[in-house]
Image 1 (tube, rainbow, N blue to C red):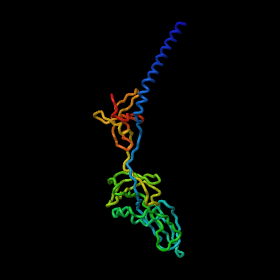
Image 2: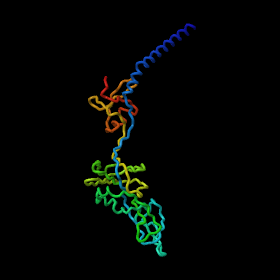
Image 3: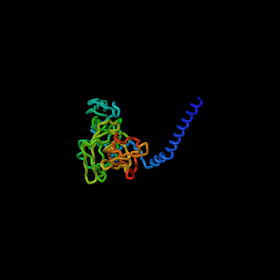
Image 4: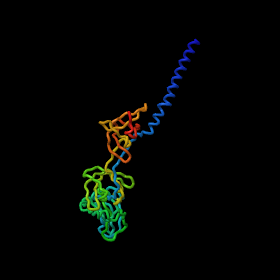
Length: 303
């Protein structure tokens, strides 16, 4: 019995000794190589890359201005931004004991923000706009009038079309990029609101270019602003980001060298989406995965 215990202890000691030797070998010879190689590697990360352009922008809407029709005190029945049907009463004008109801001439959103440009900056008049004149206009937002009384026939509110509205990007010719009819874009407002839109047309002269973008998404502030500093996003690409120099070739395909668990590198072909200031965007879902490590400089790879 004692002999068997001694034999088991001997075998166990040998196994432990071998494991310790193996661990020391990994620690002394393999791990340093892996640690050193990591300094030469880059982690593959997810990235969303946008082509965007800053621009002065103008909100252009279908706007129907409604006047008081006469002098008198005014009572209002509809709040700012409320959608109202055609012929619904919006206000009353009291003149000499008479009450005259003012109704909505069309269906749309009621707004009391007026700037006098409702007939000038209208979608149907875009082709008449002179880019330089528009670019050099005084940049004033509409002001909420909503007067308690009016002297004479005065504008008191407007109805804003509820289906489609527009943003015109004003671009210096030197900064102009090509936008095509039907191109999908996004417009970002100063408060971070983003609206998907479609390029309808453009106009330019010797100094400026105007790009008309139609938008269908509802934005509650669209009737209260005219000018804003915005961003036009012309394209969006998503994928995996690797360093510029990590792209190499095996003679047939572009690819990167991916670090394996044993410290060696394996070439994996990739599909390049686009070059960016931060690296190269490659197709996700291919031979390279998120958080893989790739050799930063493919030209340094040696078999």
